[in-house]
Length: 462
Ligand code: NAI
Image 1 (spheres, rainbow, N blue to C red):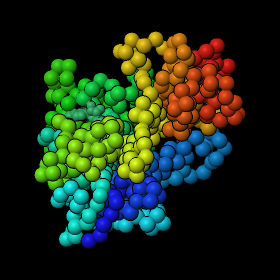
Image 2 (cartoon, rainbow, N blue to C red; image 1 turned 60 degrees about the horizontal axis):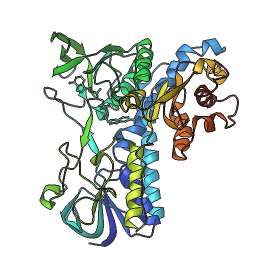
Image 3 (spheres, rainbow, N blue to C red; image 1 turned 90 degrees about the horizontal axis):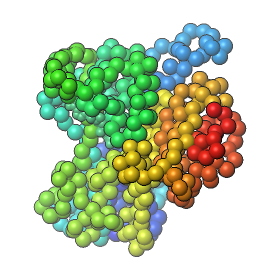
Image 4 (cartoon, rainbow, N blue to C red; image 1 turned 30 degrees about the vertical axis):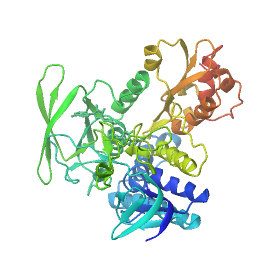
């Protein structure tokens, strides 16, 4: 048993970042983690491993489609799936060990085991109960279940099983055209799998700027993904090696079935707070099962805070990280703050998709007068040289003040490009500020500047 200023439960991006910042601010800190490795879903079975597979499959795509045109001739690579998984596991291990190192460096104790809160100020891990003046719940989320669908993580999988398949399937049905479904669907499509996505709504990636969503879906179709839209999956019947998916079309209630070797269920995630003892403590929850927090991530029980996927807001690692820093600063007596209006969202397909701030649909609904500046990557020299001319940058600015209200992009490396807009928005930039900032040539970032120019007197290269 030990006394701590802070015990953080969960070592995902929210928890581990918070623990490091707490320690840096002079607080005696421990982080509870029941997995064998630190890093939570993101590092072990989410963001990081999926990016390894996205990178490997993108390289294969480049070799198959673009090498010959660049004068790189020879045998095209074939997929050694075992090696690809080993590469992915190595990436995971480097990252999770990195967190272990950072914990040691910052003197954060890793309390190994699953934690619970038997009483305010107490955290139980295994047989030991520790004292904690402050407790931060950073327990993340798990895949939500779908009625009529039983996940075995072999034939019917969540994103976790999709990162560990024993072979590349011939046919995969993806339920849900959200971020997970499309990222993993594109990995397997590039590896040669026939991928069919079944989506309840009429557009992919709900909440995304509609013009981007439409272009994104068209691009994925060109890459071979098949879409069945407006279809609600009713049930999945699986054997040890095959599955049959039954869905109903919303427009006419017609039922249809499709067979697959693997079915990926990607219909959302839900907060994971089981076993913490929150109900016994009287911690208030929202009706969607999230821990209810105030402006400073405080729950209704003094000394207990919550951050990340366990609370409201987008389920994004970087949102959790920022909250982790904010709550650490709050506990240390500073003024922790997160600007929820400037949280970027990125889909790591190829081309990438990125957005921040308001969409055109949101601006219309709010009745706000805005202008649009757009620029296609076809007009960007670097993109053309790199076979990456597909996509565009769109900047939305206030019609009167020119202040940037949002940006939406599809194209090469837009997951990185979006941050110039984020910084601009944090500083209250006008589109003209971005347009008048010198951008190196030739870079993809020139497309952002051109879109900013298009909000004013016009882009140069279109
Ligand atoms: P999602 O909420 O993004 O998408 C789920 C989709 O499934 C929706 O389009 C929904 O309409 C559809 N759906 C629901 N029930 C259905 C049914 N019965 N039949 C057909 N379609 C159905 O959820 P997803 O992709 O599982 O991701 C979960 C969370 O993880 C999200 O919050 C996402 O932001 C986060 N995430 C973020 C990543 C990133 O930032 N790159 C990567 C992976 C996950």
